View 1 (cartoon, rainbow, N blue to C red):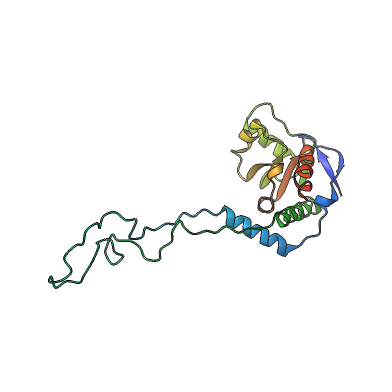
View 2 (cartoon, one colour):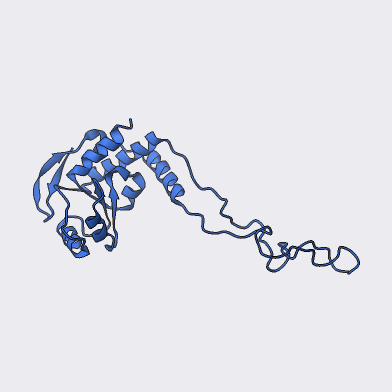
Length: 211
């Protein structure tokens, strides 16, 4: 499969051949869905947490003696029956949402997502992507010249480039990732995938060697 190569000014300068074992894989929606759900679950953070009677403060002694007062018997003022006591059956940080998924399935789902982008012309390939200064304005000007509508873009870099990362982080609807860390969830979260030609080599070296 061939795709157009652009320069940073948005002009077509040629074409390149995408490796079919990565960018021409038959889609399996069920597999992609399973992988994406597992990745979303693995990224989920457990925030809601209620304290049970063993975690709330106080309640070290029995509030009153067992018999003879005419009142109900109690052993601690931190019982769930008391105001300020522990919470019964509340959400806790002990919950685990993680789901294990085989590496082969994750890799195949990634290839399917990349293939979908390629078939729908949602991959924008650049001969190179460099800026001299870490300025958001410079990066915004580059994106405006590319056929990506200037938003909802995922930029895959072949290696860490501090200038690019600093310039991109203030742009809304634009995220940056290293090509070796590409995954199905991030690809499906953005409309366009922008990357230099060098990133294709990194993808091949990273994911095809795992087979």
